[in-house]
Length: 110
Image (cartoon, rainbow, N blue to C red):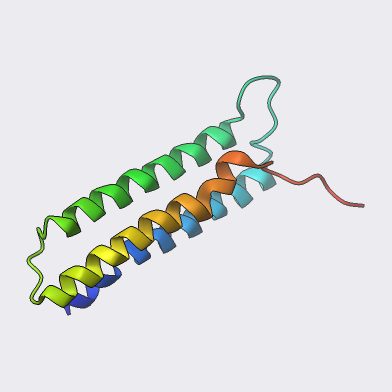
């Protein structure tokens, strides 16, 4: 059972971060956290911070999987775990990038 958790750790971290960051974006837009007079909005700072934290967590998890700190029971499990770690890191970089680079909240369409 621990091997299954080891293999799925990085994709599950990506899933949790994806849900949390886009949920935070929706909440922040609904509450008007994106409106500021100057400088970056509090919502933008929170979202970029969440994205950065996700990248750091994914990189730490990948390092842990690569150094085999969990002691995989089979070489296959270790290889697949490291592949999953890379997948989680790339997915976090790519799928959460729009939070850092695009408009936060769309204008209301009438």
